[in-house]
Amino acid sequence: MSTSAHARGGIPVAGFALAIGSAASFALSGTFASALMSAGWSPGAAATARIALAAIVLAIPTVVALRGTWGRVWRAKGPILLFGLLAVAGCQLAFFMAVQFIPPSLALLIEFMGPVLLVLWTWMRSRIAPSKLTLLGAAVAVVGLVAISGVASGQALNPLGILLALVAAIGNAAYYATGASSDHGIPPLPFVGLGLSVGAITLVIVSAAGVLPFTMTGAAAVIAGAPLAPAVVVAGMVLISTVLSYLLGVAAARRLGAIVSSFTGYSEALFGIFWTIVLLGIVPTGWQWLGAALIVAGVVTVKLGEVGGERARSAALVGTRAD
Image (tube, rainbow, N blue to C red; front, side, top):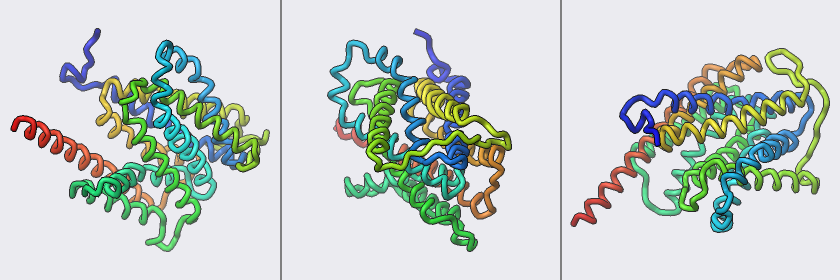
């Protein structure tokens, strides 16, 4: 068994490269979806195409990875269903609906409020207050959300778009909550594959029942000023910003560990701004730049507070056992 650079004490360059690649490819999803919807696609059609086709692509690797261990799947049905219904189907649909009303980069930044919502939810359930650093980070992120909304500058974003992006943030929180757990014994790749399958089945059912508007068109989708066939854009959305991004993310997490890889994942929001400017020509305002910086700083501060709190709890537990 080879030893990683991280284990040897060196800088895990390959791990960071994989994590950055994952973030950059994930961030393209909003650009692809926005182009499709500008061409006449409904959010439901874009979300269903992305999740269903990605689930098909990952079906064989998932089956191979779970060979002989299907009993674990039944025991992990709760986390898998929650991941598929909320973190995959709900999050993606809300995000794709949000980019109908606000730029993809801003919707992505608001979605990244997920960790802050998760901290607040945990506080409500456990009645144990987070650390002061965590609360500070949450406050900074909320101020960033206000700034990015444009209310302070008098050029407010569409409130429905902000609300939908916050719903996506709830799905993002569910992604972290369910994806971080390894108690069920299912490796990351098949867990993602199963979650995508649940999400795909859900979206197909609600679309077929007419609950979710489902419209596809053959009109060209424009990215970076170039008209592209919808099939090309869908392929990019599925293969680049879904399958490739998940695979790179899993590989990065195994080299960097969950904490470091999750920190690096916050660069996705910055890539979202970059792709929106380069490919869609939408430049954020000064207040939105400030809000973006505050949200990223706030979420990172929340993460630092949570890491410090976890270490303090672990040290206290060790001390108690020693006594």
